[in-house]
Amino acid sequence: MQIVSNVALISINETMLVQLVSFLIFLFILNRVLIRPLRNVMQQRKDLVADTQQEMMEAQTELEESIRQIRQNEAAVLRAANDLRAKLEEDGNQEAQSIVAAARSEVEALRRKAEAEVSALITEARMSLQVESETVATRIMEKILDRRLAS
Image: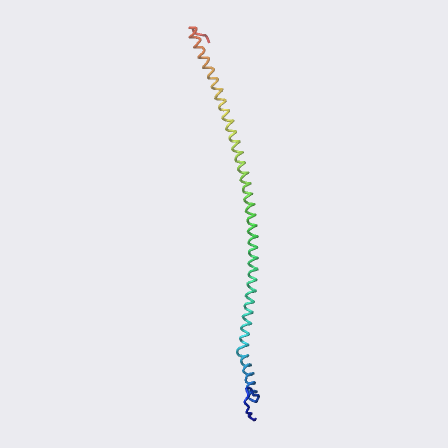
C-alpha cells in the first residue's frame, strides 16, 4: 500500500474502508445491544397500553350493561312495589268498608234495642200515669163532692 499524500479534506484510501467496516461493525453491535432491546421494550409497552385500553373498553361496556340491568331491576321493583301498594290499599279499603258496615249494623241493632226499651218505658210510664191520674181524679172528685165514691 502506498500512502498518498494529498492535502484534501476527504481522501479515499484504505483507511476509509477500515473506518467504514469499523462503523458498520459498530452499527451492528449498537443495533444488537441497544436498538433492538429498546424497540422490543417500546413494542411491549405499546402492546400493554393497547391491552389496557381494550380491557378498559370491555370494563366500560360491562359497566354500562350492569347499569342498564340495575335500572331495569329498579323499574321492575318499583312496579312491583306500586302494584303491592295498590293491592294493600284496596285490601285496606275493603277491610275498612267491612268494619264500617259491621259498625253500622251494630249501631242499627243498638238503636233498635234502645228504641224498644224506650217504647217499653213509655208504655209503662203511660200505664202508671193513667192509674195515678185515675187515683188523683177520684180524690179530686171526692174532695169536690165531699163524699166517697164507690169504685
